[in-house]
Image 1 (tube, rainbow, N blue to C red):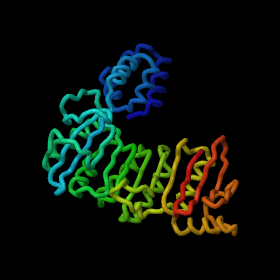
Image 2: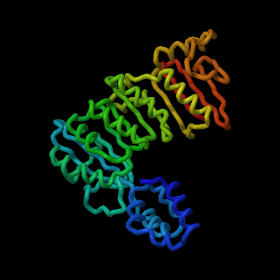
Image 3: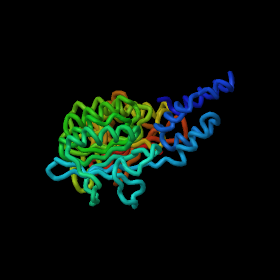
Image 4: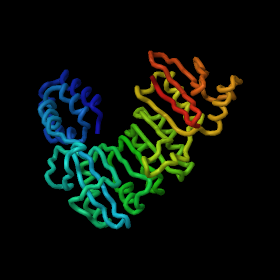
Length: 327
């Protein structure tokens, strides 16, 4: 499905050649396009004018972005399901009282303390609920805690086919890793938060690919899963990751709000020690020389100034953490 910017170009090009051709665009096509766009993109689409305006306005005004919450029994045999518009709204049954303008924007698992309208066995979840989720969740955020029944999460990871924009998850087996790798390869993922201590080293290649994605916004390898996982992640931020972001920054290729954070790899610890004690930096293969190095009793920071007004920081704290951010 084309992005709004592409649609804008197509419409303007058509307008220059023939207004009659614009009128011939099938309404069904416009309606199908609007159904899969994010709400903010619908707002942009309204600015194009005919024949897009009326349909885009209708979708924008009626669009509700819902959260689908899955509550799993302790034995992992049944799944409770409820959907919610705003945080304080009561949960509704998935599939009832919903219109064609409603979309699933967030999918979460865990204990919310609500009484689900339906509690289904796992097989019925696969055959009935997942197809409905896929039809309503074209672009979604996904949250799965570390301690979730594997049969449910396997069904979720293998059954969801839409575009994930944000993912927060602990390591939940091979299906989990495959899902993340698939979403990174699709190129729409913006934010990724990984926690838990069993992530395979093989996922590092996909994480580096994610850092090169035009849509990359945030990679958090340190955040713990609330009260369920206090150990953070076994994955670390290494020199290749830092070099990737610095080189993108110097080309003017990073988005506002970029953040990379996590525990330091051994080579990053060497860099921190060299900065901290005023020694020579070790050989930094592929990492451009910083514009400035700042030391104080709390943090040590490498600073790069770019072609624009923004600045990139790599901040080393005494808690064994490094944060790379754009400001």
